[in-house]
Length: 456
Image 1 (cartoon, rainbow, N blue to C red):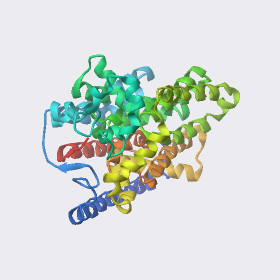
Image 2 (image 1 turned 30 degrees about the vertical axis):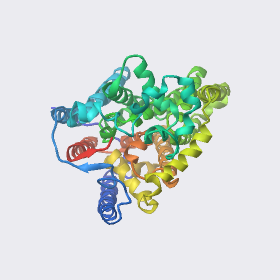
Image 3 (image 1 turned 90 degrees about the horizontal axis):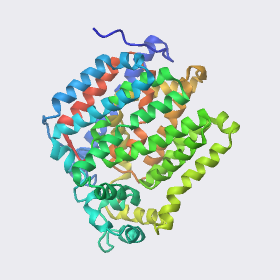
Image 4 (image 1 turned 90 degrees about the vertical axis):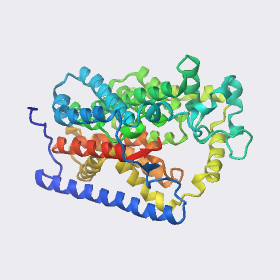
């Protein structure tokens, strides 16, 4: 029999907190239901949403697959034993166990669609990065010429995802090809394996900035996130991991006074901005880290120097190679309006995107965010770490909302916002009865993966 699950004090009191959590979850269910029903009506009448199963880019396709037994086993094991193991394992053991379990969960969900359909061909479709590997035989020439193929009517225009991201995203897969890891299978394995490390980076950050107890309570929720449905073979999972490690290293730098960590964090922040234009908003999460670690920054100003120096490296390299980030972004905005982005109605997606976020992060995260909001409004004691955790989560939510209001994220946010969504999950550390909420997370992910065929 598993031992009794660890409990945490509720910012609302033991009974009122659970009731309000359920109210918040109910409101989230209503939001998703509205997004499905209204989205279905809009798509059937005007065909402007450009998605098959609003608000997700998916199609209704109930199915089982070779990954089904493994997914059920991983889910059951984490729900039954995850909270107790996370509380008891030595910290150095918890991190690799969390990564391995997240890896198993993501792989098993991806394999519900089988190896070929679920992993090997996802990054080889006409919109994806592997379509242009052969056009980068001359890397310097490819970078100098990159902006000339962004617009939809330009000669040999890039596929949607290549045009929609700075070239570091594409170059990742070019370099994998160069070292012999060719094809969609290796590309998919890369994204899943690296993407699964994001949960470790978040745990490291929460421990450094809040406290270890909260990090341990968050661990099972990071491992068993519904986001794994899209972390499987989406390149955005890889982007999320790079951004998460940038934040984690910055947290270690400001709490330990390490210029080396600050410089490496800056390097990864620079790379993050050259993987996805929208991930410049990770700066809001970084700002929260600097605020929480302001004492360390005041004592060692060299940390900021190292951070900025590291952040300048990747932009300098790409600029020297002939790629103009700002010009490329300007052209991307035009390309976005030339395609589906110019057709999809802002009035629907500005709130339906939030319904997508509910599906990615789960009802437990909605309840956790409610508790985090309560902590911030009541100014709970920083000594317990809860207010520090709540501030970190609030910064991620702010970044997500800015992305939403920008109008550059109309649909497909189930993958595009993965780098922000993973930072909302630690709010689940504030929940009472973690096993019940973990079960809800697992059921949601399993239903999504078995009832829908997702586009990513």
